[in-house]
Amino acid sequence: MPTTTIDGHVIHVDDEGFMTEYTEWSEPLGKALAAQIGIEMSDEHWKAIRFLRTDFADQGETATLRRVSVLGGIPTKQLFVLFPQKPAKKMAYVAGLPKPHGCV
Amino acid sequence: MRDLLILGGGTAGTMVANKLRKRLERDAWRVTVVDRDDVHPYQPGYLFLPFGGYTEQQVVRSRHAFIADGVDLVLGDVDRVRPEANTVTLTDGRTLPYDYLVIASGTTPRPDQTPGMLGTEWRRRIFDFYTLDGAKALAEALKRFDHGRLVVHVTEMPIKCPVAPLEFAFLAEAWLRQKGVRDRVELTYVTPLPGAFTQPVASAHLGSMLDERKIAVEPDFMVERIDEERKTLVSYDEREVPFDLLVTVPLNMGADFVARSGLGDELNYVPVDKHTMLSRKHDNIFALGDASDIPASKAGSVAHFSVEIFVENFLEHVAGLPMTGAFDGHANCFVESGDGKGLLIDFNYDTEPLPGKYPLPRIGPMDLLKETRANHLGKLAFRWVYWNVLLPGRPIPLPALMSMAGKETEPTTATQER
Image (cartoon, rainbow over all chains, first blue to last red; front, side):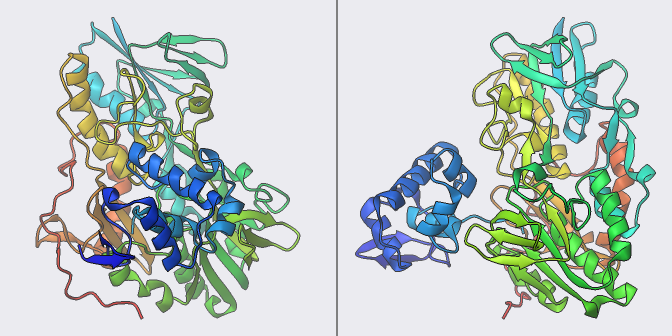
């Protein structure tokens, strides 16, 4: 896997820039990743990202939008406001988790 | 006498009952299957019904016919599981005790979960094809459809048979062409995922299939509601896709009794260990097939391969031994692509679909990630295998765990889309 440097952090990423090592992530890095895609982190953004981090540690999978809405307590509509157009993908990117995918 | 109770007599439940009946001593174990009806559908066949490809008789049989002697089939609706008492109560008041419980109650399309889906246009302009009634109604609608906007839509992942909506789009495109009306129809594929293909190697090999067929793709579309008046899909971020005929895959959910019993996640799937399918909460409850939350495709092949691993594990578990088998998420799916051809994909938790040959390296006869006539014939032949070999629990000479033999790990012929 290639490495890249974001805001002084050296991280392992896949060819789309998604982090591949769960433990390399930190909140300052999350903030820098968000800035890369034009998002300035608010408390509400952090609520979603912290839920994703915790849920991944427990489940081993990136939470779906439904999971963030039902268990994380942020309505889907609001996730589209916080992370416009592609909330599932953008949240995974900022949280340093694998992006959502189908089987083919 | 110990009781093995299986909730659901579909692909997974029937295989478990038949395989374990042969392995568990009759004077020591009672095996019981509960289902709400005596109708066993061959669900892959639903895909062909809208195009007149199969008759109802070819895709539906009696559950009884496939459940071995020595297994009790109880018809009734499950009210709830009471894990603290090791019992299951049915809505008619009966109580069934268990020592070990297998939840194999599958997943069900729920059009009621999207506002406007189950309204005045349901089965008029809005259809599903994952139910027998839906597939039959859609066949009638397609006969009359000769121009306009045909939209194939996936509400939310996960869905069972995740390639089926793509197959439907390919088959519809070919069918419209054969009817001579293809140029009068706008065909659009609407998906909540970032694209029709999302895995790198599959995208590189197959990404152009939609372009070539002039099927427009609307990616990252999370439907919030259907505007019935304007016959339009509306997303959470206010995008709109109008339709004249909508073929949708509604939200899929596990059985409601799973939720009532406190055993489900946010979509009523039972959280289990992804290698053993043992409940994370209860040491005597397993969930198999589509009913569990394992991050594999909800598909008959996954049910089949995981049951093979489960059966050996179960015998160890009830003997007080550690379970030594570990399911790898192996799935193997035919993908119809129209004009009498099909693709085949073979993958697991860790390995994405790759090109190559299956099941025999270099020989095949199936080609992976490639459109061939042999793959289509394989898909058609599988219906016979399902009824006659798979459900009765007879051995199939295919390894349960995925094999890398026959797969090309460095695809050199891949052409990148755009």
